[in-house]
Amino acid sequence: MTHTVCSLLLLATLTLFAGSIRNDFQDDFRLTNALNALDTAIANFSTTSSTPASPVQENELRTSRLRPRYSEGTLRLVGGRGVHEGNVEIFHIGRWGAICDDEWDIREATVICRQLGFTRAHQVTENSQFGLSRKRVWMDNVYCNGDERNITDCRFDGWGAHDCTQREGAGVVCFEPRLHETTTTTTTTEMPTTILENDTLTNNTGNNTQQQMMMRDSNAAKVSIRAVMTGPMQVRLMGGRVREEGRVEVRFGDGSWGLVCGDGWGMLEANVVCKMLGLGYAQAPVQSNFFGGLHLGMILSGVKCSGREISLADCLHDQMGWAYCPGRAENIAGVMCTDIAPDLILDYQEIERSAYLEDRQLFFLQCAMEENCMAKSAYPQNREIYGWQLEVRRLLRFTAKSKNIGTADFRPVIPKEMWQWHHCHLHYHSMEVFAHFDIIDGRGKRVAEGHKASFCLEDNQCDMGIQPKYACANYGDQGISVGCTDTYLHNVDCQWIDITDVAPGYYFLKISINPEFKIPEMSYENNAALCSLYYNSLSIHVWNCTMMRP
Image (tube, rainbow, N blue to C red; front, top):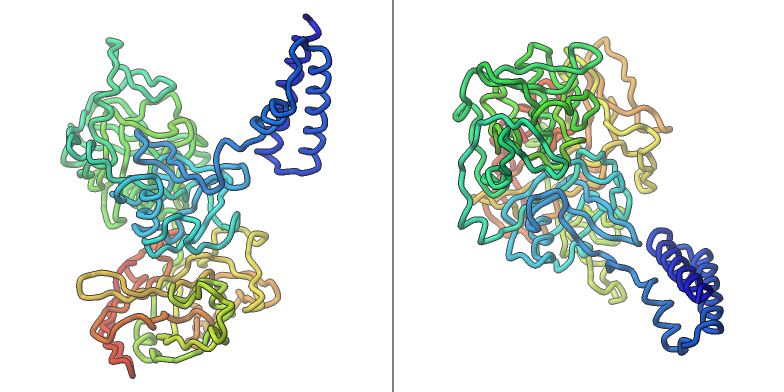
């Protein structure tokens, strides 16, 4: 009897071990060893047990434990207060991983929500709105049209290819009719005294107030902090190594100091705090407990700023007082400030001068197709069809010049060892998203866009007396020096918008640099140009460009 029990325990242990190897490592050699050990255990058990297992039972027992729990490409939302919202994670080769928010918009969110069984997407979230994402990032620069059945049908950089941090998790809020029918916009202003591990708040009477915490969910419209605060708002930085950094603490009137949740906390919010405190400009937003603060209550969440505000009180928020914060232990808002910063300005006159049309066969656009620079219709479903490379695409080409008029060099965020080599361009690219090119119709709908995979930054032209120091060639350092201009000429691959499917008519052309505010600047108000565009199928005219923010 004892021998039988031991055999059963050994069998269960080896089965779970083999299943773990199958799910975590996908290692055929180790999996084979585990299966052999499992077969031996089954044989030993069969010879000692009074009821030996049949061959069919043995096979079912061996394979059932090895079957993956999730299928390839399975999606889930994590960190939200319901199954309808959260950061997006995808299951690939036995591991869960995050999706980066680079170029993340409503089209990708629509595909995600539809794949999860919801009717449509209600909201797109960025900057790890529902807590820091996983360190493993499976997908970056996802590019969907909105009609795909599965997110893996969309174009992206490749499994595991990314330049993202845990602060760049992509998320969605899917449309949930029941929540939209019952959502209220009440905001409480009491201070919590105890925060439990499961994010449930309790007051000093011990009553559960999770229902109050849920009163403002992600479907509710954000409201101004100033509109609901009970007294003057004070802001300070604490826990930093120097006065220019630390966690953000706030209080209202004579109330207690509390924390700001890092849900969606980004460069724009950090910039408002730094300017409000007279510390210059934001160098980096922080979403972690690096600066401490776990002993304090979370009293403000869902802060959203445009970057133009004078005070944090002018920004929008979700909750005050009873503030729900996903992943609270690692989701405390903080900032690092600096007194110098770059400031890019786009040369809109060069866009007007250089815009023209070019018809080009797909045979000459192979590198561009690899970088997803073409419209969806350029990618044939069957490349075995004779002559598909002879198809002609119509491209709107133009030159884009970006000058740094700030007080510090514009440098890429990711370290040099993470730069990607592009064999088509024969140099390294240091930024995934540096510019967006969009054509917009009179109703504000985007009808075409330029999707350039990545960029190389260098000093192409500098003011008198300034020596260029950044170059793309020979694995040189990349960036844009103060007083220098980075120029992407019209003849460079992907410096275009594929307008093959665009009907003739009047449109708007929008060119944006640093469009996702990933790199700090003194101002983002001069980072985009909006131009009038007329296309008559034979020629194109771009005029009346004005500066604006992305």
